[in-house]
Amino acid sequence: MSFFRRPQDSNLHGRTRRRGRRRCCIFHLPGGEAVTLRLTMSSEKDEDTTPRQRLSCSKYFDALWFCYSPVHQMQQYYRLGSLDNCSGKWGALYDCLNLKTKRASEVEEILKTREKSVPHIWSFRSPKEARYHWQKLFGHLDEQE
Image (tube, rainbow, N blue to C red; front, side, top):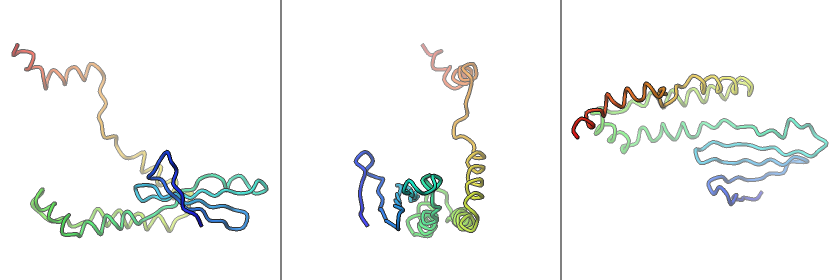
């Protein structure tokens, strides 16, 4: 087993394992995700060479663990005036553990539909709408001159 770092991205690191005629590389991404690449000899099927993403629930467990820490609870109390019950973190961990019980094709389909259902962070406007809202918010600054 050897550990290595890619020079162009120091946050991406992995380890290589050899199993028979296969070589398996597991890359750990900065967010806690792990991506497994399986390299095969030319006599084996080509479908094994596609990168497969392993679902890891450790980042959800870590987020839940931090949620119950005194630091997080005091931050929430200072900012919002109440303690956090961490129900969102429990839900995320439950969803992740639930996805681990499903087949890879089902997981891929569920994750794609979830990604599509999340609204974009920005609301896009046409140039006409943008001009109207700009004048509404900052038009009074032009009148002062």
